[in-house]
Length: 476
Image (cartoon, rainbow, N blue to C red; front, side):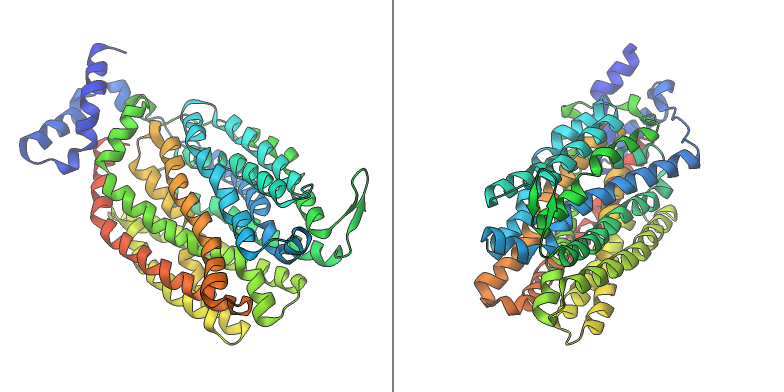
């Protein structure tokens, strides 16, 4: 590193990060640094890989994301069986679906984010898949609630590796104007996985309702068999990540990726991140509440059998998600390419209103048909992962993206996975005190969370414009 580069790196980072907030001569000095004082080798950017390589990576990562959601959500169809076998309450089921997973998912996120910033990202993903697949398999071997709780904790720890690494890799494979669409296609994996978990889980619960006999293990109940069937394949599918070449880290020479730089960046953009984390935490909590409790809602409210619930919700979830995610990603990319710097938040000002109104009203409908019409409209904004991640990647220096993604997932994941499933159980057990009124619990949850999200995005419009302007000044 030559002297000029060292002086810019150690003294100019704070000013360059904060440039959009400055005025007058100080702002002109920072712009001058950007235009001429940075060494030429630092300012140059590597070309993006060809589209075949980029979209192959999206396909592989989508498949692994689908596997993650199968292992994460398969428990939602086993509520009745797990309660009967282990003697647990709705609140404890909420912990298994939310807090148990979210705790280590959040705690392991930051160290794994650092690994993403410093190490080969394919290897980080590989180790994560092996850990969560083994833990998901162990769920099927659990004989007590503490054992199942421990296994769910480890599923969360393993899955914490995938999203930060995938976001970072895709940011190095696609230009900003196409990044949200690529992230949206990747995020279809969540819809595919959630749908497969319902379809596979529903089929197994019905087909193996009297249990199955396996070599070595002997007699195994249906819910345990479902965990084994969905967990074991991950141990082999983990190797698919090596089909992706490790992409060059774009702009990595501008920042060394120190913790000091990360804290300066966070402090400079604190209003943007506060609104981002709060708003998307509430949207994600609404989505996870629906994922966790919809099967139980249809059982208790409409009296549907588990097999029918699994098939119908699988088709509904995948079709609506597969249509909504590319559409919303393309809309945001189009707005952003036209110069709407706050496109990601602006979309969710409108989306938060739709999610609140339709997400609340659908659970008050007297028939399944009316429910699905309104729930389909609510699905459009609830698929927020790509837009939320895209906003983070756009404003964050490349050398900090793994840890910033991990911090985002720490706050939003812990809040959403804990609050989302648990708030429904709290309304049912403590407010309405009647299992049959789960539809009111789900409606109330959306009515609480939706307005908070909308307000956060309104307050975040100006901070996002400033954060995007700072990133543009850094030529990222």
